[in-house]
Image 1 (cartoon, helix red, strand yellow):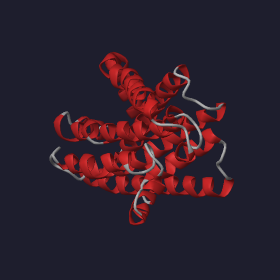
Image 2: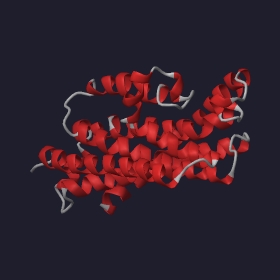
Image 3: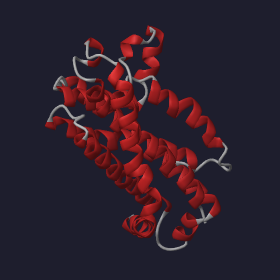
Image 4: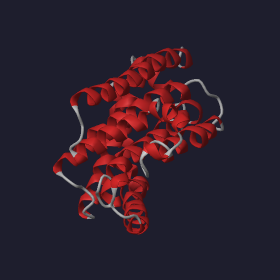
Length: 251
């Protein structure tokens, strides 16, 4: 498992510049555009918890950015190592097992999410978008939410033969989860029949945790419920991933 992680880290050390824009510049531009630009037209009120819009937005953007990063790292990046580069096949020709390949890949995704969430929080802090020190809770919450999504997508990626299969995930899963789970406006402003659809997504649970911690309104019982749901998704993804990796990398 650590050998797989070492491979990914070795590659990243040599190619980190190619991802520096998405890791550092994009969060800055997005927070400036939505938090400062669009947010300047949104008055603080009940919908934003009495806070400036950028303060309302920042914890949620940590979570949504983590999920968007997890989508790429768990789809095209993994598919390439299955289909085009066949890196995973080379790994299992050694004593490394398919399960260890999966665990190493998930560890690498978690590390990338940690980099991205940390960068976003630093940008938010510089822009004055963090209400209290408790806003740093968005870091582990963002990573956990991203992994709840990533583990399932990695398992799915092990079953596909064409990259076109990911287009539907972006259009019908990632984008709706980003827009309609309470990140940009309270969920209460959506029709009631849409609420259950938001509740089953990992993003809604992550936003509730991150924003509740930042606002100081997070209570123990709901927090445990959100955490249990996210960890359960990770567990399901790992179990499915083990089955599909064993099947795909059987030698």
